[in-house]
Image 1 (cartoon, helix red, strand yellow):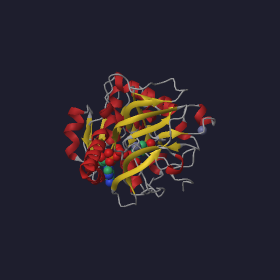
Image 2 (cartoon, rainbow, N blue to C red; image 1 turned 135 degrees about the horizontal axis):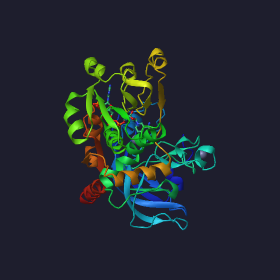
Image 3 (cartoon, rainbow, N blue to C red; image 1 turned 120 degrees about the vertical axis):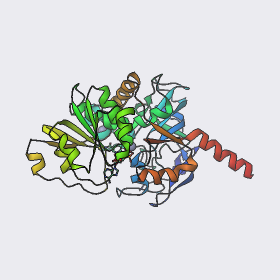
Image 4 (tube, rainbow, N blue to C red; image 1 turned 180 degrees about the vertical axis):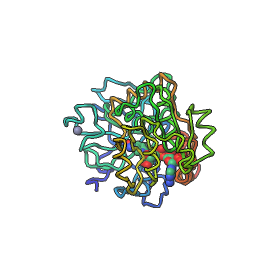
Length: 369
Ligand code: NAP
Ligand code: ZN
Ligand code: ZN
């Protein structure tokens, strides 16, 4: 539990959309944020992506949600104020914040630019900040974060379609790099064609891989092949299709958000192949020992990426014209969007137009007066 309520210590009024219980419902929420500290960057939020982790969290599916919970960790906007020690950005610059807003900055992980693995990591929402208050995410009118956690948007990177890269992008980019799957000529499968999966296809193609999409949704085949540039498409329940690509893959990026069988996926890997889990189902997955023993296979995981690598990822994306395919919504559609996301009905990321949603609320309240 947070030791202090934000209003006890925070002077700046803020507004957003939060969950007050695990029903999955979000509603307008007034709160406050801290004044701009000397290492802080304050920015007006223009767009915020909706990650499936937001949905897991508002419903407390992972069991560690604290309410009120204000989600959003794919946050993009424009700098309005910087502290005296800030050198990286200035007012007017286009910036973003992803999943992290703090860490200890002295442990081995932080020293190696892996703040994401710091034992004292502070997540953008549902964490306790250094001042003892809960962190609140990007479904809100503005953000304030330490400069280290601010990502600069390259000139040609749009704020709306670029915002999802701050979580979805880094979550798939980082393991491809770390596990050696970014070498040209790899054969990679992306499992689950949702927010993470569709950008994984784009990054893998940019790395020079041959990409197979493994999906539960046959209707996604045409888009996967024609629009996203995948080389083949397998329906995960069709054993005949899976057999055709048996023992062909160097690696798999598994982005599935729900419990699913690993056995058919492990069967697709070559000897020494790697199955990397990034999807985070609420219940354990079954791992049959023989499926990894035979062929000396690896099953591993990966959690977003550090700040240095996140900047590298967005710069790489800008260079290779990688953005997310998005459906822009206003906040009055948030609860419907969450229901659709739960059913996998999104092409491929919802992004909230925050500025216009806030303007709508402002108009409604002034008209009522
Ligand atoms: P998403 O947009 O909902 O995509 C998930 C995809 O998984 C769906 O589109 C669907 O693809 C597939 N799927 C859903 N239910 C399934 C089932 N029962 N069996 C098989 N496949 C199923 O979600 P997302 O935002 O990409 O996030 C995916 C997961 O990654 C979530 O669990 C999220 O919390 C997690 N995540 C982890 C990290 C990390 O750092 N490791 C970061 C961000 C998100 P098809 O229709 O193609 O089958
Ligand atoms: Zn996320
Ligand atoms: Zn640390």
